[in-house]
Image (tube, rainbow, N blue to C red; front, side, top):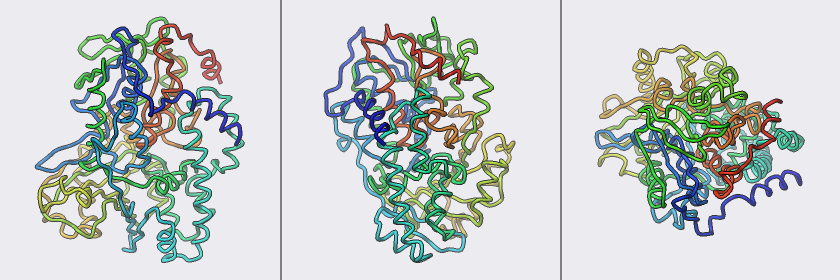
Length: 536
């Protein structure tokens, strides 16, 4: 692993030191425009500001957060998207870069169990970070798998130490960087899938499901996603699973509050970017849908990476990321999300519940490969009021339930299918976790693949952008620095390292290593290595 550590430490030298005071921009400092106020975009804007750039954050929706925006309805507060918070130090860093402490603005509380997995036959598995308790849970299903679990945890830690701690912020701009890590990745068995690696150590089918479902949280199929993602098991054990009091939206509010306090940092909402402007091969600003132009010395897109290349960059500026190449990438599944509130509480329901349906691989084949909407489903049920009663009126519960579904290549007409599907989900919840649910509903709203496309401009309505399989990871993933346009950069789920809150926050962290310092931006030469990489 010596070369890997040298590669990682080379880029560590450029990462911002959270303990130092931020650099305040001057009136004539270079100007960065960040497109999209999702978590990756907000984090990028904060990091650029802390380095001394003037920053304008531009968001087409009327509120920040992107997929992490907030819905308020009938006295209930619903986080629209991410609800599982891991690696909280990545949030803490952003506050520290602004000379603040996150605890001053947002309280994080631990969740235990991390998840309750409920199988179709009614049996349950409480999943948390306590190794002894996990072994007891595993022994309920298969005592023979306890030793295998111990070996799996050791492998997960080995993969974590390389995949997250050493390479999570490495930009992989050069093919040579990718080629040099191949032997190490092979040694760590990254050629296996997540389910394949779990199955090497675990024999019981239910325990295999418990230890392999995590890729679904970042848009991947456990039977196709590289086993690098088994690092999540160790990541959760190392830092825990947390909840932000007030919901994930409180983190969005806290981060945008930090940006409000930064000099020469502007946030604009309801401002739809129509085109990224390019002069002499360099990004020079953006044009809004109303015709206004905003000049910039560099542009960071936190918008969907495929949408950015296809719709925001004119074809004459793209030789690497052509329409054909963008369309030929494999995209994650989409989601059906139902937000609802009840006039009673369900005290025996945990904060996070995974409801496994009758099929596992067959259902995933339907979603990812056949792209058909199945009659059965597996569900993630979020009950924030278990931890935070403020998310609902007194005596009420707030929920959201999501079901992985195919993206829009399935041809499903969600204008017609949304309500029948919602009713099927309601019926299933009433049978399994929320008795008499229909009698207690008091508020309801839905998010379907149509809204992922319309609201978030996500290609094919994919919920997590580019699918995280081996041939679309690291160097093979869309790069954080554009190969086609100088001074154009990317953050968010579709670029390296990938989706999920740790992934998108780390993608902003990567910008510390690829965006030149402010005093060098106006004169930085085009990187020669990009032309070589683009031709491979």
